[in-house]
Image (tube, rainbow, N blue to C red):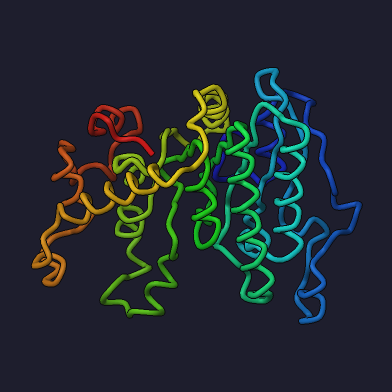
Length: 301
């Protein structure tokens, strides 16, 4: 199966890494499922919706985590988060060539909200520890559920992000925004609006991801290898955070307060045009190879 979007977590892992190299830790046979879901009478999964283990990527030893979007939208609960934290902590001990996270998640499970929120915070701390130790963390995003909520923050803490044009990355999902602020603020049924706001092409054009690939596992594999071999960016420091904040401020300044208030312009296409992207209104219909010619010079996460 070549489509990344249509594959399950285990199918992605088996096809993405060197043939026969993946060894799973805490597989379904270990029956490590969420106690909270059982107490609520909600069906659980014996791997709690995340596959972890070690594999080889182009011959290099890597640690792997793949979230299963078909189980509760890849939502993070206590056990799910603990498996991710354990993987990252083991990376600190064993020093693999990289940690590769196949992210597909709507965020924290509402069923175990407090436990899930704590778990996500622990994942972020562990990921930054791994990155600060000089071990690159590569995140792949191309599943049906996108990468939202706490996992959206986790992804942006990584060294390298790879997305397909059908992937999505954001803090709040479309349905959450609509429920909080109404359909006039954000219509979650408007697929073009959703992908203009959080889709892979938009994230790549604005520098929020490093590589844009088409929806093939082979393309994700090639980009993951390249991301693993990128020079390390070093520990997260105050100067780097301040630079990111400055870039965000510059981006906000590209659309005037009057335009924001009056909602006169489509915010995404206006932003692309003012970043210097040619034919911004046609981005949604372009193939990835064409889109690569339109990215502004110097844009990178």
